[in-house]
Image 1: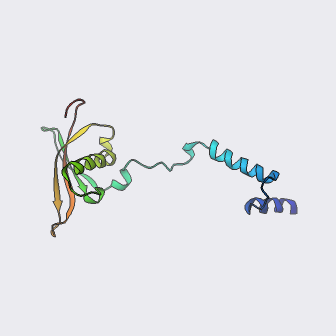
Image 2 (image 1 turned 90 degrees about the vertical axis):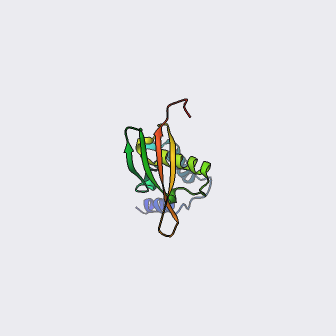
Image 3 (image 1 turned 60 degrees about the vertical axis):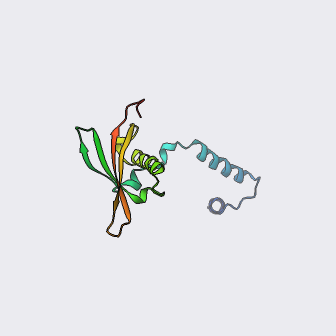
Length: 137
């Protein structure tokens, strides 16, 4: 029993000298675990934008006749000054990642309009989008 206890404390406190048989066995077991464990056992893959964007991107309106959708995007998702070209590019990325129905689909931004608080601060953007067809600009 004492020998088993000594073995357990040696493993827990990593008290074996480098190059000894128990040390080498522990290193081999650790390497085998790291290299042979299937990725599916660990569910640490980031979700594509849905967690941070939950509630921060809302569908406000759809217009079937014009084939457009209007989303309200929280300004905190866009970490850049409101320059037209960069804002459009960043908004497109945020919508692609944050809206499940847009994953893997092509769309173009028709209009971006700032939504302001009473003090004039931009709190969000109303973004109107339209499905894009391959080859169209």
